[in-house]
Image (cartoon, rainbow, N blue to C red):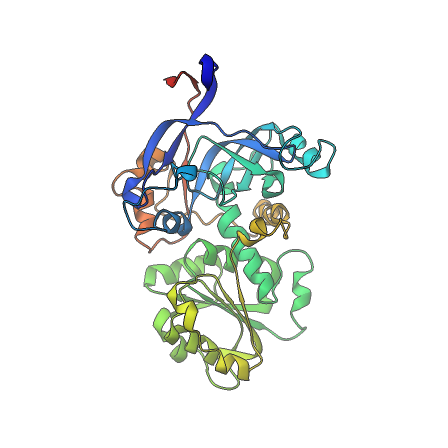
Length: 389
């Protein structure tokens, strides 16, 4: 700040130019400040790593300068940490007596998991500011690395299941007719969202649902079976592995791969009349989907992005979604799907950003389960642009 006034700063892993290789540590980013009573400041313990992080870093050609108002670009859209402060009356238009503000105050001092607003700096940082409606307290003694797996992939899975008529949680099994076993197809079942989808569906519906995952390798097939899938079929073998045609053989489809023309034709073929498809990945193929066979079957096609609720005024109770998943974890009916090659030894953010580290592995596109990155915190006090550790 001006006139020698001190301003707290923090270390971030950010990019002043677009592109994965432009990620670098910046030690003196101003620490964010809650803008109103419903916002909280979180000291980040673990940042959740997701493919969307890399998509954001590649939103423009490599080397393109980040917009001045977002430079450095700090991605990361979920994680876990500890709430260290709540905001006061401010720009968000709510006073300190609102229910959201009361929740924010109640969270101070608690360990939490959180979703980050994609319009602000994310969780590749020592501190992040979040609306309290995107924050959920974790049970005492909970493993914070595993809690960090919940917000982005877990909430995406939760919302996908709801959109295909298989809501998660208490009373969810009421959606399955007695004596009729529903069949769920998960396209791309070995990733983070697929792993959560399998587990949450199994935890809610038990043996009354058959879960089939598409996979690209024997290792992915073994992983999906561990997560709770009944069986697997090759990505390119949906037509051969399942009955297609006017009657179909699948009640619900959650598609976690780009819906190419060939893939979507296969999904439309195996869908039963009045079935439901939820698309999570867009890509160029979304521009030219052929819905004729789905139309013939009176099928429903929906889309899912976990950030839509944030952009549209917090339409969903995503903190409640996280709480339901954490309850399932505490009950032992679901577990955080950390990848077999993840460990604390390789999770530090310096190691994660190094050559061959977790971010490069995520970029490879063949991750089974989830990665999280440990954020080590150093307190900085900056005065006249000088950082002091």
